[in-house]
Amino acid sequence: MMLKLATRVLGQLGSVACKEVGKRHLSVSCRNLQPLIPIVVENTGRGERSYDIYSRLLKERIICLMGPVSDEMAAIIIAQLLFLQSESGKKPIHMYINSPGGSVTAGLGIYDTMQFVTAPVVTWCIGQACSMGSLILAAGTQGMRNSLPNSRIMIHQPSGGARGQASDIIIQAEEIIYLKKQINTIYAKHTGKSVDFIGQHIERDHFMSPVAAKEFGLIDNVLTTDKTDKDEEIPRVVSAQNK
Image (cartoon, rainbow, N blue to C red):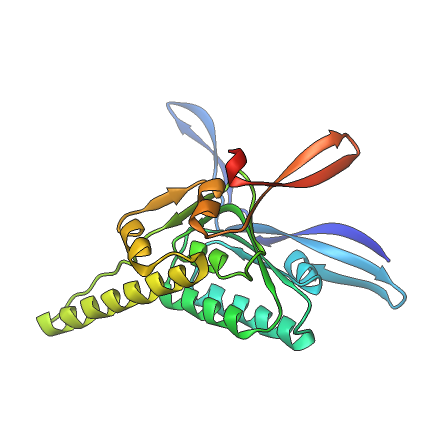
């Protein structure tokens, strides 16, 4: 089977105009420019079949959680987890995370689904895993939570706002306090730390290197690549003691 890469552009480029403002210059306006989505084209016995890159990765049981955690993002991630679970409850699912965090309830929906599926969920931090992103990273199967060496990981308490009558504001404040306790309990479960210990460290933004996150219990492995030969790459696990 042969693979080819093509590229699809979603969106349209805006107008290009030249204007005289004191001196001649070129003004470029790009409206509704969307990211480029690579397309993988497979040559099979039945002809060509094309996939967007994320669908092709899904065939290999790879999920990409890239960007803020929102209800829309959660719906996609949850659907992919359930689909892969229906295909096999034993083969590992690999989830790559690069997220600044986002909605607590959306993140908890992803978290609960990760705990529900029987397939091992291998988590990988690439870039950053902050706020709910770090909770999802820590929720991977024990021993299978990984980070690349230059990533950043951050934990903190939930935040929110409220307006309206005093009684409504009190209700919202109580809900935030409840969610804070719930998140502390989840972090404690997956790091092996006490709830009190977690509570002390999430009062403010707590940024960590991957090695520090490993010591904290959020991840299990820090991965690098040793290039011992220009044609050979060997993944290596870095222990916290060596840093």
